[in-house]
Length: 442
Image (cartoon, rainbow, N blue to C red; front, side, top):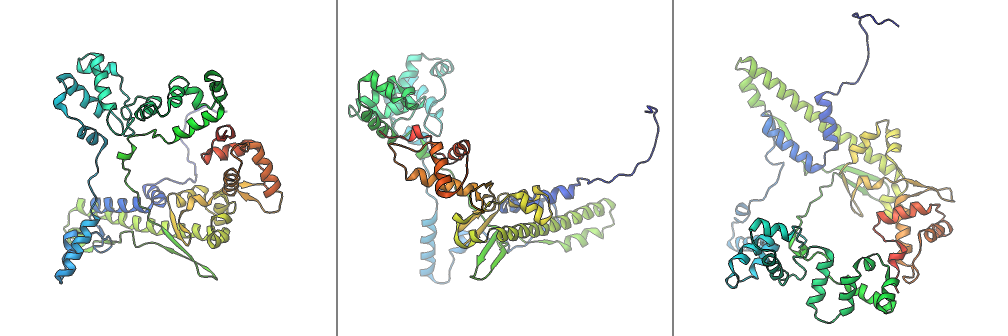
């Protein structure tokens, strides 16, 4: 092997990841909302890309309330006021509203607001009292007194430092109505949470039925007392496709109405391109090319999404006719091979894309599931297996709940679906269903 340095020529072919190709890939995986935000940002950055005025509809309450007829104007104003969002009270505001600071000394006046502002959205206090005392330069006893004031407020359980304290505060507020529950949660919390109830019955000399009653009572308590004051803003889904079945054939349409329409700003281009400035011309040419690439990428996104959607419908006709119980096994690899495109392209095409169907708005990604072998000629999907598991557990005897092995046997004998016990356990965890020992009632 020669190790001499030298110069030589070599021809090779490779795919260059250009900026335009990167942009096309990015646009393909954008959801409708992300695409809208991208185009709006581009319209600010690129003076040649212009969003048509009527393509994005907004509501101006003053404009929409103006009507020619006075009666209609009053009705419109009344309807608008009804739709205005009410002011939401935060947990800290609610707690401060219950306090009368005139009755507290200066140290409490400092400690109480500090502790309230340290409570999270679930109503828990995660800062140690020693740390608070050090920060405020007061004694630990004064901090404990401040916390006691907060824990006496509504909602009951607020200011707790852990789940155990939160539940105990709620039991205390009910007086002496459930002493056994207080004793169990106070002294045997871990045994109770791990459902090692037989040990508790021996230690407290009570029946298993009484432990079950305590468990049912604890289920009525609120483990997150501050959650009622935490409002998560609703996220609205914009469907990308509309799939319809008219009894004979399917029709697929892109839902383009929600997307902004873009156009080329000819006036701006011709006005400044004729200025003769070389830098201006180069800038405009770059922005012109950028505009055409965006336009082309949007068209490619539309074509790829339609192509993938049509193939999905071709493989899942019963699902779109009769509903989710008729979902068949289907993988992204199958779709990519039949369309002669890369599997990652299919993954990007269905990412956060939704279709409006006769059964509601569905996520395209949810239609893909692995294949489960059956004793019949037709395989089942993992979604079908999960539905069967959920139905079996829903109908089980709660005093003798079905084990994962029982479920595996029932699936094979009754449904002809061959699934291992480990797979059953995995699907059960994905469904959020506890094990048989934790589902048992006494």
